[in-house]
Length: 287
Image 1 (cartoon, rainbow, N blue to C red):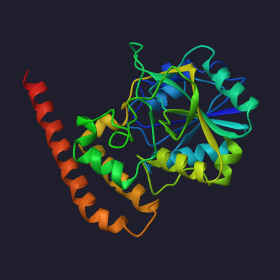
Image 2: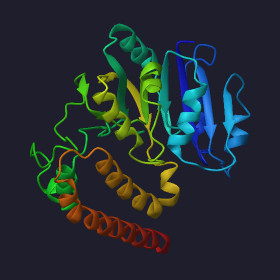
Image 3: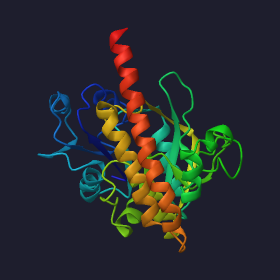
């Protein structure tokens, strides 16, 4: 088979069937599901499908580790990294594979991601730097989102209707050449949940692989079906993974000088966001 589809699940019973049903054909595409020790009905949902390979882990060692398990088992020329809270719209997977067939310079291609109501998600960003993260944490990027320097991480001016080369697409659905993944040894498991996709995009770029955004291919994405189950902990993990990423890819001697300011700001930002989430959850429960 030309394309292998790798899906990592963790308590994904509510969404996994819609995801698997959106894959055009199990005889045309190799489908590998890696379950990270779900405690809900995910296993029972997976048993309803023949023609897919299921790897059941006895513990949850993270998204990156589970994806690497699936990647190692994949036999396709291309590997589709696919979140369980997605639905591939008709014809979109073929558009992605056709693109990589036509241009060997590109190591990965990403579709347009949309919410269930059809709104386009902001799924394309530049690779973060200490400076762009600092503008974000200080709130300046939200005050001046269209400023090409201050708002350059989130890139709110990006044209989602135009096919183009990009630095870092959200990897909720990302088609990658298996040769590129093998060359880079898959995802870095030092980023168990967050920023493994950002790190992969960075390493692919440094290795000479290009990434393309193809808006004609469309995938519905619900967002946060797994990470939303423990939101406060995920907020902390997201902030710490961000710093871990910046430390790994730091260039220049000024990084640790910037880090003196950035690290405590990230910790405070995580605390405030976690507190805000808990307060809003309590208000919702009392309403």
